[in-house]
Length: 161
Image (tube, rainbow, N blue to C red; front, top):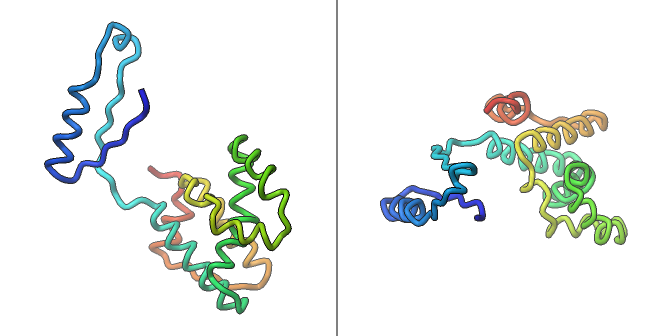
């Protein structure tokens, strides 16, 4: 069985979730390997705060470097995000070998518009990515703001659940 995640925010969605549970085919095998059902209320995640912080930083870097926020996003995805994913996933590494590694630098930057990178990150990977951006900015004498509500939750508390 494929993993299913059901969003429930209306009575109709609740009934669909109940129907999905009722439709489970329970056999003797499921006594040894039972289904796992988790019900959890979604809270605002640090990932949302991380995303807000990274786009704020793209804009700040663009202003300081007289460039475009989209270019900053694509550049940082390529130099920091892609290596994180290549390190973590063999399939992603192979995809990059047969696509990005065959392109010139300009085309690699342009490809980042279409390449999934940061959306594949978990909280820890996104925190690593933001740390890399911040470190490079500091090394180059650039200033990134640290709104306490975003920075603390996005980077410093990355290990909390």
